[in-house]
Image 1 (cartoon, rainbow over the protein chains, first blue to last red):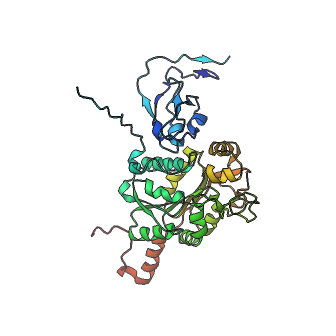
Image 2 (spheres, each protein chain N blue to C red):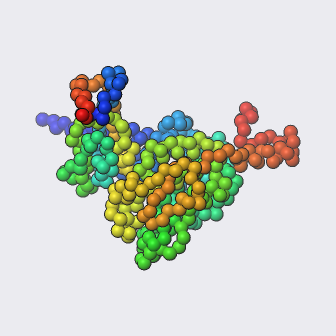
Image 3 (cartoon, chains in turn brown, purple):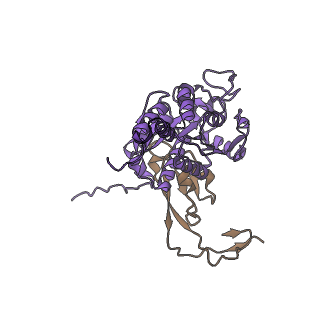
Length: 97
Length: 294
């Protein structure tokens, strides 16, 4: 993860991680989740669902920070985010210098 | 050889306990802001930790009128414009319940306009969530009392020339004690506003600006609902406590959002009890208060 400057309490703070669940058949392809995901985790896929829309797909599964914005913005209740408790791999920290 | 039928994995969205899942997927268009507003209200109800048996949702007619059918609460789908008087009766019969009116601009402000202002004047304890999409969407895109000047609709193909209503000013001047306006994009602030409005005793009003891609955006050549969301992102100005005479919405100009009014005033039932107490003295048993004998 890139920071503008490394926070002083970086060793105490654990970045939350989320796991996205997409209910593809309910999606209407509005792309709100894709547009407003602050980490750019999602992208509209090329596949079609039964209604003929393109549901989103997760392209950066490790970047999701469980902010719930996609879940709250989705007008069709088709995406939700669950918090992953244990974080196996450490996210490398670097500052923008 | 037996064929094992694999059941699809049952995925449960966290908001499903507040929705009537037999009716989902809903009928609203892609990029409609109504689903987002429902999520905001469901989150607000969850965070308030209310007993859901004590919450009633009343809707009128229109796209937003279908909200009552999708929420797994005591919900009522009433006739056109009569959601507020229906909720008033509900509140008088069961003052212990939280009554929420969830309806559209055409329903609440046009045909139900008189009911709206008089319920606000009496300061009846209810929450009114008005989803404003600037048009009568379900009937085909006619001019609504909130359509901005010069905006096109199916009954104003050369542009609307009527002055629209300024809904926060209307609500505040009629006597509402809580008035806020947010767009469907300000999802966390909208959730907070709905939470505060439900918790507030008295007539509280939340206006939600929601994108309508199929009619308002198409007839005005504004692109899709996503383009309208981007417009809200770029053109919303947050001004808490703004002068309500200056929060009109013109066609594709800045939208002033925020919490405008938050005052204390005795509610209708408090005034009723006080007035009757004055006349009848100790013989009067206050209404809507638990006497412990029922």
